[in-house]
Length: 248
Image (cartoon, rainbow, N blue to C red; front, side, top):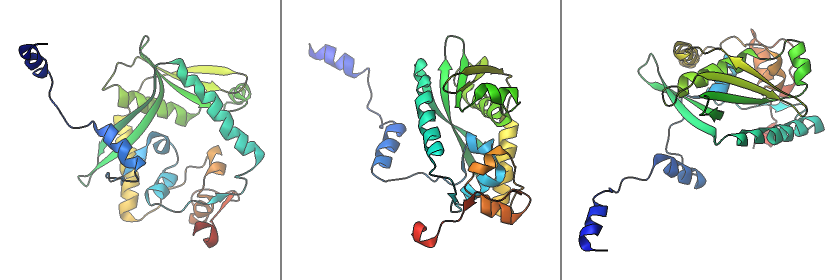
């Protein structure tokens, strides 16, 4: 290759900084955390109980679930991992995103999400939910869950700025059935901002929002604290604060 050709090829490229994602990955692997994760939320948290989100923001110590190590609970975790392999059905999968929310105090909160699957052919975002007794839950009116609908609509709002989205699908799967629902599109920009601001205001004013009681409460690791605070869990807590020996 002649000197002239080499010079032409070199003129087509410019050395730049290493991509931020690679730097962050290497830093995490080495125990380095350069980002400030204050006021950082996940979509899953945001569509769930506000009180639980506040406890996480305040880094309140989690409690121990009384039935945390039952055979059924351990199998449920593994079962979910098995079924989640269905995300490999699409090349575009496990896609991370961050959405920035301006706050009243001039700061910015971060909303992080991870989309299970995206079908670029039909411009469809797909969220997979693994559970048990899918058909029975549908018959009882337990599925689809409102928080799952909100979660998918949030993903639509977040990802639509970067790729075309025309359809929203929730897929419920257990070991014997797969059921899919199409969800109506909805711009969640204002909802996200309001939801985050309410939690941030509670942090600044040292107040506790009302607990949003649901069937998920029995899996929460703040049940005793929520019960004692009032305006939340009313059933007997199924979690208990960790002993000092366990937390040390």
